[in-house]
Amino acid sequence: MLVMGIVSPMATLPQLYKLFFSHTQHAAGLSLVTWVLYALITLLWAIYGIYHKNPTIWVGNALSFLMDAAMAGGIYVYAGFVI
Amino acid sequence: MLVMGIVSPMATLPQLYKLFFSHTQHAAGLSLVTWVLYALITLLWAIYGIYHKNPTIWVGNALSFLMDAAMAGGIYVYAGFVI
Image (cartoon, each protein chain N blue to C red):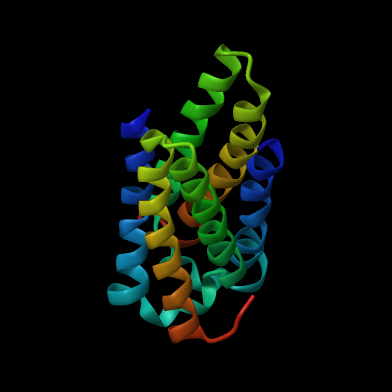
Protein backbone atom coordinates (compact mmCIF):
# COMPACT_ATOMS: atom_id res chain seq x y z
CA MET A 1 0.00 0.00 0.00
CA LEU A 2 2.99 2.32 0.56
CA VAL A 3 3.91 1.73 -3.11
CA MET A 4 0.35 2.62 -4.17
CA GLY A 5 0.69 5.83 -2.14
CA ILE A 6 3.81 6.82 -4.05
CA VAL A 7 2.46 5.93 -7.53
CA SER A 8 -0.19 8.64 -7.23
CA PRO A 9 2.16 11.64 -6.77
CA MET A 10 4.45 10.25 -9.49
CA ALA A 11 1.42 10.09 -11.81
CA THR A 12 1.11 13.87 -11.45
CA LEU A 13 4.59 14.49 -12.94
CA PRO A 14 3.48 14.43 -16.63
CA GLN A 15 0.71 16.92 -15.80
CA LEU A 16 3.23 19.17 -14.02
CA TYR A 17 5.61 18.93 -17.00
CA LYS A 18 2.85 19.98 -19.38
CA LEU A 19 1.83 22.93 -17.21
CA PHE A 20 5.34 24.28 -16.58
CA PHE A 21 7.19 23.33 -19.76
CA SER A 22 5.48 21.93 -22.84
CA HIS A 23 1.90 23.28 -22.75
CA THR A 24 2.01 26.40 -20.58
CA GLN A 25 -0.30 28.19 -23.06
CA HIS A 26 -3.05 25.72 -22.13
CA ALA A 27 -2.92 26.55 -18.40
CA ALA A 28 -6.37 28.17 -18.65
CA GLY A 29 -7.82 24.71 -19.28
CA LEU A 30 -6.71 23.56 -15.85
CA SER A 31 -8.95 24.05 -12.82
CA LEU A 32 -7.46 26.06 -9.95
CA VAL A 33 -10.38 24.93 -7.73
CA THR A 34 -9.67 21.25 -8.43
CA TRP A 35 -5.95 21.44 -7.72
CA VAL A 36 -6.27 23.66 -4.64
CA LEU A 37 -8.81 21.17 -3.21
CA TYR A 38 -6.54 18.22 -4.10
CA ALA A 39 -3.69 20.00 -2.28
CA LEU A 40 -5.84 20.66 0.81
CA ILE A 41 -7.13 17.07 0.93
CA THR A 42 -3.66 15.55 0.62
CA LEU A 43 -2.34 18.00 3.25
CA LEU A 44 -5.08 16.92 5.68
CA TRP A 45 -4.32 13.23 5.03
CA ALA A 46 -0.58 13.86 5.49
CA ILE A 47 -1.24 15.58 8.84
CA TYR A 48 -3.59 12.74 9.84
CA GLY A 49 -0.91 10.16 8.92
CA ILE A 50 1.86 12.00 10.80
CA TYR A 51 -0.39 12.39 13.84
CA HIS A 52 -1.13 8.65 13.82
CA LYS A 53 2.55 7.82 13.03
CA ASN A 54 1.45 5.92 9.91
CA PRO A 55 3.99 6.39 7.09
CA THR A 56 1.80 4.39 4.67
CA ILE A 57 -0.61 7.32 4.87
CA TRP A 58 1.65 10.33 5.28
CA VAL A 59 4.54 9.65 2.87
CA GLY A 60 2.40 9.39 -0.28
CA ASN A 61 0.09 12.19 0.79
CA ALA A 62 2.95 14.54 1.67
CA LEU A 63 4.42 13.95 -1.81
CA SER A 64 0.97 14.38 -3.40
CA PHE A 65 0.52 17.63 -1.49
CA LEU A 66 3.79 18.99 -2.93
CA MET A 67 2.76 17.98 -6.47
CA ASP A 68 -0.79 19.35 -6.17
CA ALA A 69 0.40 22.60 -4.56
CA ALA A 70 2.89 23.02 -7.43
CA MET A 71 0.02 22.47 -9.90
CA ALA A 72 -2.14 25.08 -8.12
CA GLY A 73 0.77 27.54 -8.01
CA GLY A 74 1.53 27.03 -11.69
CA ILE A 75 -2.09 27.51 -12.73
CA TYR A 76 -2.25 30.75 -10.73
CA VAL A 77 1.01 32.04 -12.26
CA TYR A 78 0.18 31.13 -15.89
CA ALA A 79 -3.61 31.50 -16.01
CA GLY A 80 -4.39 33.78 -13.06
CA PHE A 81 -7.27 33.45 -10.65
CA VAL A 82 -9.41 31.08 -12.73
CA ILE A 83 -12.11 28.55 -11.82
CA MET B 1 -13.05 10.07 6.73
CA LEU B 2 -15.95 9.01 4.47
CA VAL B 3 -16.64 12.73 3.90
CA MET B 4 -12.97 13.30 2.99
CA GLY B 5 -13.29 10.45 0.49
CA ILE B 6 -16.22 12.13 -1.23
CA VAL B 7 -14.69 15.64 -1.30
CA SER B 8 -11.91 14.43 -3.61
CA PRO B 9 -14.14 13.24 -6.50
CA MET B 10 -16.31 16.36 -6.11
CA ALA B 11 -13.12 18.46 -6.43
CA THR B 12 -12.64 17.00 -9.89
CA LEU B 13 -15.96 18.42 -11.17
CA PRO B 14 -14.60 21.90 -12.09
CA GLN B 15 -11.78 20.24 -14.04
CA LEU B 16 -14.30 18.01 -15.85
CA TYR B 17 -16.46 21.06 -16.65
CA LYS B 18 -13.48 22.89 -18.13
CA LEU B 19 -12.47 19.89 -20.25
CA PHE B 20 -15.94 19.08 -21.60
CA PHE B 21 -17.60 22.50 -21.75
CA SER B 22 -15.74 25.76 -21.16
CA HIS B 23 -12.12 25.08 -22.19
CA THR B 24 -12.22 22.11 -24.56
CA GLN B 25 -9.65 23.82 -26.82
CA HIS B 26 -7.11 23.51 -23.99
CA ALA B 27 -7.46 19.71 -23.71
CA ALA B 28 -3.93 19.29 -25.10
CA GLY B 29 -2.60 20.83 -21.87
CA LEU B 30 -4.02 17.94 -19.86
CA SER B 31 -1.98 14.80 -19.31
CA LEU B 32 -3.57 11.56 -20.50
CA VAL B 33 -0.88 9.61 -18.58
CA THR B 34 -1.72 11.38 -15.30
CA TRP B 35 -5.50 10.85 -15.56
CA VAL B 36 -5.26 7.24 -16.76
CA LEU B 37 -2.98 6.47 -13.80
CA TYR B 38 -5.33 8.31 -11.40
CA ALA B 39 -8.20 6.19 -12.77
CA LEU B 40 -6.24 2.93 -12.36
CA ILE B 41 -5.14 3.80 -8.81
CA THR B 42 -8.67 4.72 -7.69
CA LEU B 43 -10.04 1.57 -9.36
CA LEU B 44 -7.54 -0.58 -7.44
CA TRP B 45 -8.46 1.17 -4.16
CA ALA B 46 -12.17 0.73 -4.90
CA ILE B 47 -11.67 -3.01 -5.53
CA TYR B 48 -9.54 -3.25 -2.36
CA GLY B 49 -12.28 -1.48 -0.36
CA ILE B 50 -15.06 -3.65 -1.76
CA TYR B 51 -13.02 -6.81 -1.09
CA HIS B 52 -12.48 -5.72 2.53
CA LYS B 53 -16.13 -4.53 2.83
CA ASN B 54 -14.92 -1.05 3.82
CA PRO B 55 -17.22 1.65 2.39
CA THR B 56 -14.96 4.42 3.74
CA ILE B 57 -12.44 3.24 1.16
CA TRP B 58 -14.57 2.08 -1.75
CA VAL B 59 -17.31 4.74 -1.98
CA GLY B 60 -14.96 7.70 -2.50
CA ASN B 61 -12.57 5.74 -4.70
CA ALA B 62 -15.37 4.37 -6.90
CA LEU B 63 -16.62 7.95 -7.43
CA SER B 64 -13.06 9.15 -8.07
CA PHE B 65 -12.58 6.35 -10.58
CA LEU B 66 -15.65 7.52 -12.53
CA MET B 67 -14.41 11.14 -12.52
CA ASP B 68 -10.83 10.25 -13.47
CA ALA B 69 -11.96 7.84 -16.19
CA ALA B 70 -14.22 10.57 -17.60
CA MET B 71 -11.22 12.95 -17.60
CA ALA B 72 -9.05 10.39 -19.40
CA GLY B 73 -11.82 9.70 -21.93
CA GLY B 74 -12.35 13.42 -22.56
CA ILE B 75 -8.64 14.07 -23.06
CA TYR B 76 -8.46 11.21 -25.56
CA VAL B 77 -11.52 12.47 -27.47
CA TYR B 78 -10.50 16.14 -27.59
CA ALA B 79 -6.69 15.95 -27.70
CA GLY B 80 -6.01 12.43 -28.99
CA PHE B 81 -3.32 10.07 -27.78
CA VAL B 82 -1.16 12.65 -25.96
CA ILE B 83 1.32 12.36 -23.10
